[in-house]
Length: 285
Image 1 (tube, one colour):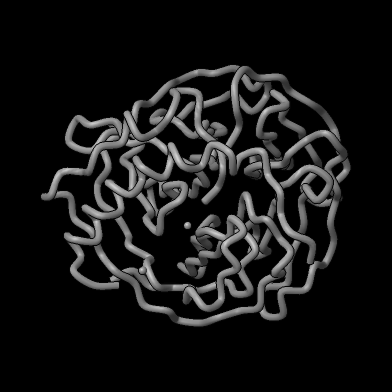
Image 2: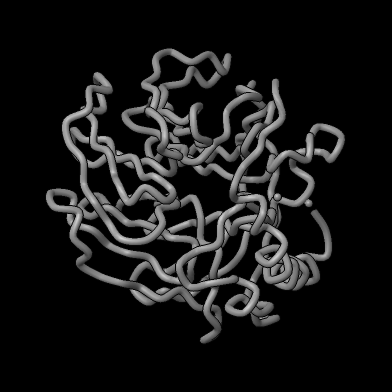
């Protein structure tokens, strides 16, 4: 595989400073147990908006239930289960796209490339439509999820990062400390939710997943997941996934934690990362 050269990496140092504070506090709270994305959200450098969370915020660990092969060339941006089937979106200009993946083998069952110059981001399925964000193009592409046939395009301001749904709305992250609720028919913003930990804004909100009435978010460039109350925006706790992929299996080319998929029917919870060789089924302790 040729080296990854991303425009995001040039801004990674400023963002990393803020996340180190966040991850360091969470690690201290856990006492045991463990990545990079390259973008800074609309709110500016996250180092100024992500102080360490309050010490009283609970942080829990994890148990690996199963390991599955994952395409080492996939720059994972979004991950989700739909009707028991696994879908993934990938990034980088020229290699972005959406795909359906066979979990047990990691085999790509079908895919749809995203044309240049777009940099693909998160995905979500609402009804019969699959929505795909782009990082800086200001466009969301809409597909028939069953065929991957493109059916529409929406424009939006700012950057696009992660997507999930409460079953009615499209919920979007932009790398800052707020989540946006959007109308799936028009993509208009219907609600803005600031995310805080004991009143302190929590930025670097990245890939999203709806898990049993909560929004779970990857915190970019860290091994932490934030569990967010969708009614208040308060962080209810953190899941520390430090160490889930050994350093010996990382290349250092932006291969950080990114990707959460939850199947409410089976209660199966998957996580992976950009350019990771493995997808993990986990149980939160």
